[in-house]
Image 1 (cartoon, one colour):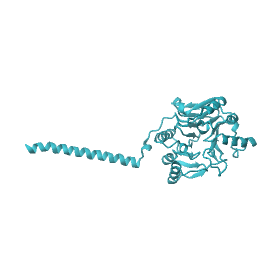
Image 2: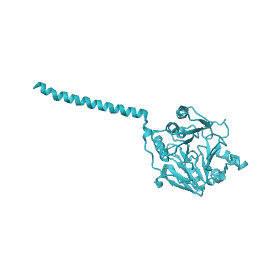
Image 3: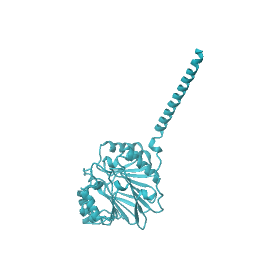
Image 4: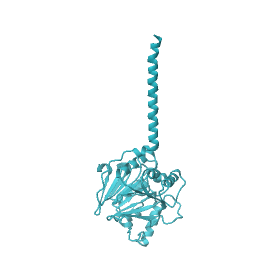
Length: 324
């Protein structure tokens, strides 16, 4: 009888051993998959409607209190200007968004070293085919900036500084020209950030990075001397013909002066800021000025992603939810 009672115990112990071995094997398999195929590589793409033939699209992506603008050229490749703060939530969302666009190649521009602009760049470099990374002259030894440079070096991505008259041009006629900064001796992170003018099909966009009213006035003085001063060869740049403005410095009261907004005469403006952010962006003063000088004001903290579709005839602004 004693021997019979031990048999069930042995069988139970054997079953427990088998279950533990299977569980350990599963843990090992998951660990190996995670090591060789990082979790973020398996993230599903967001569902984004296909771009029409001959169209360009500009995506102002919701990355909280940070900046990220993705320009889809008619050729199909993308220009990514800033990439958010590098947080898990925003990196994950940006990766899924870019997967949804299906672009085979990316060109990256980090407008300046602050984490809310360059924090997510390293993740993009690690996960996508990046042709070149454009950097500001004013660099930094911050953790995010250093990580971005290390990722570029590890992946063999060439880097280049972008300053006034630097240009990114496509055969379709779409182009982006850098207006500022124009000196390698500038040291202020915000006012030495990269300002880009994008043009396609008669629609012009100005990406104001984080410049303040001080830099706005400098650009206006340069422009007053000669309205062709920012032209790069045959690439035409006219501040007074801006249609869409990506508002400087998340709508800070220290930017978007009346004189600047009056000169630009933009029909629409987009503010990139996070909900209930600690900087109280956008500032009430900036919002009041924008409301006075701009026909349509779009806030990413209220609307989420904003998408501008540009054809050879006109442009249309929508929230991404309305495109689904």
